[in-house]
Image 1 (cartoon, rainbow, N blue to C red):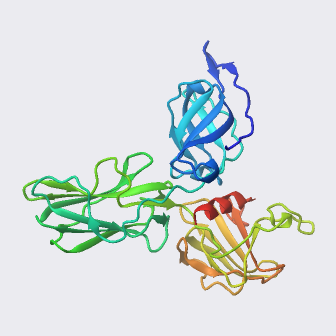
Image 2: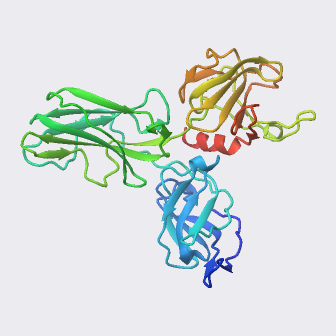
Image 3: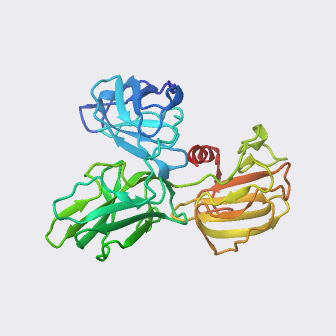
Length: 388
């Protein structure tokens, strides 16, 4: 059971200029009801039960995530009871507080952070294989495959969808990328007609235009029509386990065994008259370090305290990410483009460091020592660690 701190009791307050009353919902606790992980812990795809007060007016639950509004996930709900609410944990939700919202816009207090495990990975389909259909008589025969079941925004290589057709030559092709969370098609491709037996591919970097897509489960769907108009589809509408993958917006930066240190490693701990502006994650010297989120290198160099360091302005975010005490200078220079998961250095102990570790900082806009403010990166690190 997932115990949450009691929230404010439900109360009725008059809406300005109206004679009606708005109920303030309250969350007392939540527990995993179905499709749970071990020890009945919740994960993406689990059914969650929320117990509290004033829940009959609820229209959505917000999973607040770990690092600002960018990882918030909203789930529409259909409430019945005033004290009980059931909902499915969305695939893209990460650990963090919950908030219940009513149709009148009244919000509960944020609950204590709820720990969520990653969802069960979708079935792998890396090699081209025949699709389950549906298919009309005389339509092209389809084989499809998807390169991975786990992808990251702005990573290289991007997630790749491949296909091959046989039988009737296609006259029109359409590839849809479908969100399992909303059921909506978020991107489409219209490849030129291909010869039977030829393998073609499309790739996706996790962006919709210039904006990072929400974390969650997505599926590729191929639709091919022959000269007669007979159509074949790689999956039925609503099927999300064929050519599916989970998209995440960050990867954990240390690619090896690590620990989060003791009290002195934490954000805000004392540092001889100043405050620690990051979190220290300990690992063996030489352990590979990768970019938690891709972007442009803002600064790199050596500092007496930070040692060999690197600062990346996260693409599509308002966050700067700083990596310090690296074994050697990073190969990247200011202005270089770095992709999510790309190696930027190795764990070291250069500068003012006790033991091999990564000192990791996250800064809000306008940026690192450029008017922004550092914030505690530990909740983010722990979320990324849970899936990568």
